[in-house]
Length: 309
Image (cartoon, rainbow, N blue to C red; front, side, top):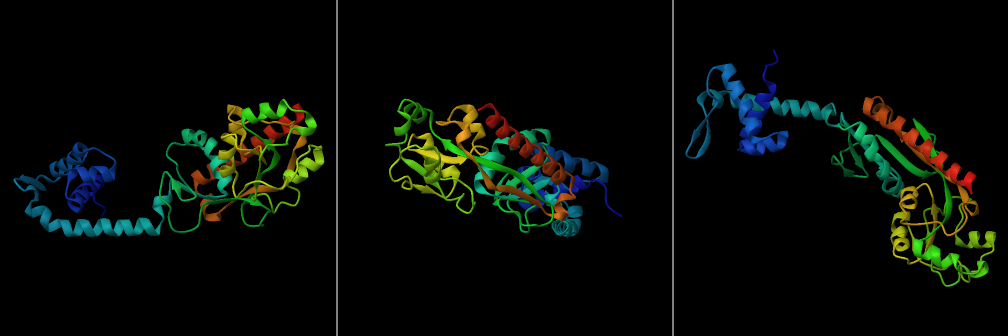
């Protein structure tokens, strides 16, 4: 028969294991007084004391001394069962994702989902509300081609266009069109190299007629996130996906020095795949629906930008 007052027994076991009510409270996320109240409730139910105070601290009564080994063993078994059944992940979502997408796209939107679902905890690329756990991620997101796996969804393609700091945009706009890029350092990204149609500076300059000697020269970055730091500090202009920098553009931290029509869509896209066993969990299914909705909004936003240009 399963004993009643399980929470009181848990507080008692943790207090004995850690050596203090305060430490037990921290593990349970409650106050020291609340731990004491749980133990007192159990004592009142049983009709005898479990703990007594002495000069050396809290001491066990004979009744608790006899029962404690069994209580400790019981909670050890419960912890083992919880680990085997993956109870810890019940309200957790673990995401393994493309770094730029995670930091620039997901991070700026995730607070909205978390506000509507405050009990759901995230771990994205090993960092977040909860620690990284062993096993497969619930969701994986990458930029590239479809892999054909279970639960795979295309999120969105991106639209590549030069971006710059507001200061550099002013400088470029004040120059003659044929000379606009002369003297400006160009920043390059390696993350689009595998895309067969993605444009870089040499292709973009050739297509739009802006004169720039040695267009292939300049600092190369592995990720958009790294290159943006250089853009923010007026160190150069960058061609990157507008979907990733939507919040920076809307806040005015970066701007568009050239017409939106002078960009190009990527052939590769961001894809998400959800583990079959994970998507059966309610919170993962909710995250999947939200992710597809926000991705559709991103595509719509890019299309509206192009339509207005």
